[in-house]
Length: 144
Image 1: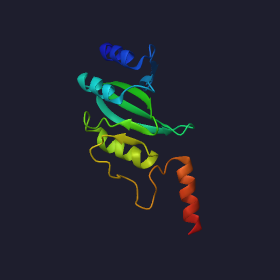
Image 2: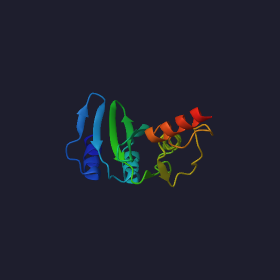
Image 3: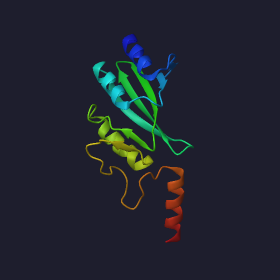
Image 4: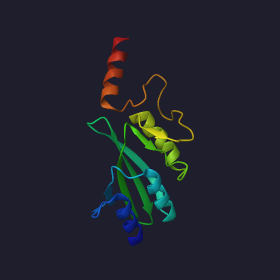
């Protein structure tokens, strides 16, 4: 596993990833998600899931969670203009995860092979978990 950590240190530029009870954490806002996905595939780590967190600057942090045996590696990436490259062509397990994050947080995954909504009801706007969008949708539904 040291080899993977060393590759991630080189990719992320973070020399001291944080070891926590729930795995190793990298803060890598500028990492290329495609290079990350290729690294993890090569080293046989499985994408467990990805989570999203709205930022106060209008962007979103996407945390990719990878596992191998009993080891978890978590890499936090930041969108640029609410966009990230899709990793689903490299790691097909990312497909539904990216679609869900798009529905809930309005993150656009460039190059995604199937960008149709996954969990968003037709009457809800894209990104309805984002504070401003949720508040607007609530006001609109109250006015009806």
